[in-house]
Length: 268
Image 1: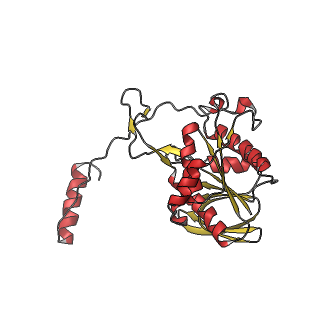
Image 2: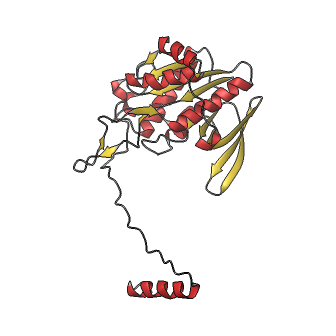
Image 3: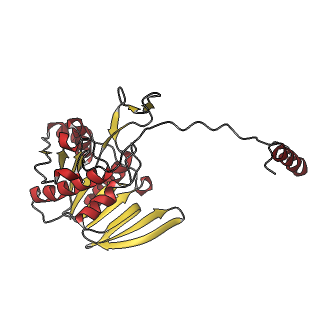
């Protein structure tokens, strides 16, 4: 079984601040981390590798050279191979352009790995720096393969995948045959830590870089030219004040106090 996991290096959103004048994200001094949902996707792939014979796990990331850090971390966790899609021409790509570029990269990586296509492509449900949850589904659409999103449980039987999908009301179970793209939620598993031995080996690995030319993209579909989404500004929502808490022990007194406040505010 050939599994590809798409991973992303993202700024630690707990440390991100917004410029009050420019309304842009201040990235200076903000540490970069392995996107948490992508770690769940990788762990799912590694669990399949642990439980079945002949499973190979390949990583793919799109970003600047420093994104090698998350690829090396993924290799240290147990992935077999890793590729970085990096090119200035890809700068400014929105989710549509990113999905297209990654789909082209997936096909190139499959070629380099000597396979016709990957059986399973795993992605985190979303990246914490954008929270759009669009890139995974867009990769599947560009490749013309089925997609199953928000996976909280994955079972593989032969060439069929059964996924317990999380939704707002509970769960549904969906099946699909290979090839299929699946996006992972945090409830899927608890990602393992890289081993010391794996970390040392990963540091010595040479990670192949792919350019826009390598993956044969239509350059009108990438970067700013291929991005119909325009971000006008980013801002921190104003904090809401705490509502009134009525602490009367007597229910009748509590209702009377509530009615008095609602009347005073002309709500009723």
